[in-house]
Structure formats: structure tokens, C-alpha cells
Image 1 (cartoon, rainbow, N blue to C red):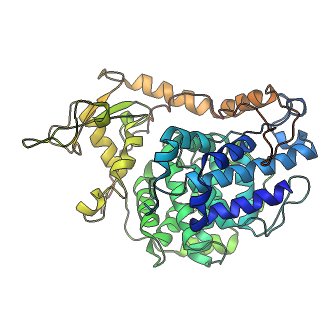
Image 2 (cartoon, rainbow, N blue to C red):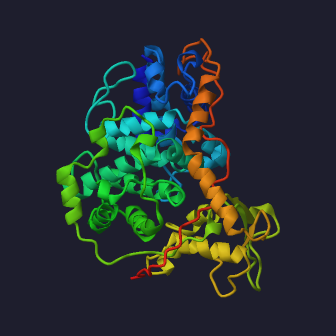
Image 3 (spheres, rainbow, N blue to C red):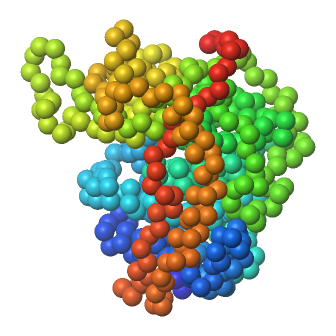
Length: 466
């Protein structure tokens, strides 16, 4: 009964007309309790014994993992589908007012054990099949569009971007790229224009971490990234948000790390062929002509992992409609690159520049302004300052942070397994009809650590800006 109830609620949350009526405190509380379920500590081994936690779960636990996944996807549809970066600004009242931005972000926050389940779901639905066994589902329960939409909505939380990247980033990016290829080249019906937009925008959001760690395997290994992205951007069905995401990926592709290893990431039980384009699709992608050599601004090291504060500049002359000295005009960001979203797609800035902007160039300008070295540059109407002061960061420190990040990628996931294995699980059943539900504390999937600075190797080869 509970599976059927969750299935109905999930599909109601997918529909814009009924979604509004489900955005209330009662529904949010019930779903969040189910979504916070943690696997039994007794059935999960220590990281030294196994890297595949699914092998040691009982049938009941696998079934409850599916319920957890449905609840999290429903929360994603309800609270991550509108009024976010790259999404529509609907005429319905914003749910930020009813719940508060912090509450909404908390409802969307996933655990590291959930991310592989959603990636596995995407792999299955992208190939039009279900999952056999405990915790399984038939091919009609989910589809690729539902999975891609859920991922897109969850990635509106910046902590989820890091969770996906650390646990299963390379495999997820491969599946998203394959979804784009299936839409752009083979034009399969299960990846329509909306699903393709979700796939491209998700790759775009995940690429913010691709400067520092493995983003995708190389083209030589069967992943012609530029050809597929360019093909999608040229299609008549490409949406405005999709085109923006595709253009940003093309501008930054020269600086992303195409050295990914699929064996490093979860989930381990994905069929190998799911992560391959196949000979026909790969050959067709290689034949797609890429016009020009689009390369954007090279990212400065300062735009990564260095928190900064933004303060609105008071207008020159006239009345000030905003109390400029109050906290209303001040905002904090984890990095200059994170602050770009409010100046990027949908901000109106791209309209003033003729429809073309480069997120990295904006982030560089912000970093220069914070460094006090952008007298003639663009500050976008704000005053920017580093939260750690304006002390110079030397190259040695930058390299050390990058090496720490790269070496700690798998350690972070093992730490997640240790966290899950020590969590207490209550004995009451999970239900959306009763208050006796799981009280497990939600796992913060990835240890709280600042995203390290990037150190791109020196590239002496000139690049084209046309």
C-alpha cells in the first residue's frame, strides 16, 4: 500500500497543476521522514571489507531504499522545480515565502547513499528497463524523463552537486551525455526536448567541479563531448536554458579534466554497456561537425573555493530605494563561481550582451574586483570582498589544495560508508499515514569541506575566441 501511495504522490508532484496543493508543511514533513531513512548498520560492512554496500543489504532494506528514493524524488519535484537558476519563474506564489529558503534546501539535501540509487535508476530508465529483485520496479514505474527531472531539481542545492560529483560524478556525467546523444542524434522518444534540457543543464552544474577533478573519460575512450554538446546546441528543439548550458560547456571544455575512470565511482552494479555510446551512436557523434574552436576565458584560481561577500553599491545621486547599510543588500557565497548564477542566465545580463555571456569571465571579473585589481573592469553594480581578507594565495597553497582534493575523492565516499554503518536505525515501520516513522538523523553525505582551489596546468597554446 505504501509503495502505491508514494507512486501516486510522486506523479501528482510531477504535474504543475497539482504540485501547488502538495506544497504544504504536512506533506513535506511526512516525505522528509521517509527520505531520511538510513540502512541498517548491522548489514553494512566496514569500507575495508567491501565497496558495494548493496551486496550486504537485506530484502527489506532494499525495498525501503526504493521508498526513500521515491520520497526524495517527490521532494525534488515539489521544492526544486521552480524559481531556481535556469528554471521557469511561474505565476504561482513562491514557496520560499511559506517554507523559507533554508528549509527548502534542507528538504532537497540528499545523502551519499541516495545518489548512487538515483544514478542506477537513470541508467535503467535510459535503456527502457526496470529492476529485478528486492527494491526493484518494472519499466513503467519510472522513465528517463522523471529521473532526469529529479536530478536537475536536486542539483539546485549546491551541496547535492558536490555529493553527486564525489560519489558517482563520472558515471552520472556519462549517462547525462548519453541522454543528450540519444536526443540529438538518434532522436529517441524517451528523451524529449525537456528531458534533454534537464540533462544538459545538469552536466553544466556538475562541470563547476570538473575543473578540479575528473569530469568525463576522454574522447579516445568513446566520449566525443564537444561533438554531442555542439549537436544539441544547434537543434531547433534546443530550449533557451539548454542552449545557455551547452554554450557554457563548450566555452569551458578546454579546462575540464577529461581523465575520468569509471571504475572509481558508484554505483558498481551498472551494466557496462549502459556507460557506452555503442558503435553506431559513437560513429554518428564523431561525424557531427563542430563549427569553430569555441574556447572561453581561462579560470583564475581565485574563483574556486574562496568565500566572498557581495554588497550592493548605492546609486549615485537620487533617493536610495533600498537600505544599503542593512543586511538586505549583503550576500555571501562559497566562491566567485557560485556567485555567478545570479548574474548568468535569466538575470538579463545576457540580453544586454547580445545573448552571449561567459560565466567564467564573470567569475574572473568578480575575483579581480575582490582583489582590488579591476578598476577598468565590470563589477556588475556590487562591491565584492573576500571573507578571508585580501591576502595573496601563493601557487604552492593552490597546488596543495588541489592534490588534497584529488587524493581525497574516494576517501570521502569511504567516510560516508563509515557514517552509514554507525547510524542507529529504529524498529518502527516507515509510513506516510502514521507518525511512528523513522527518526534517523539525515546523513550529510560529504564531509563539510571547502571546495579547493583549482590549479590548471599552464597552457602555452593560444586559443581562439571566435
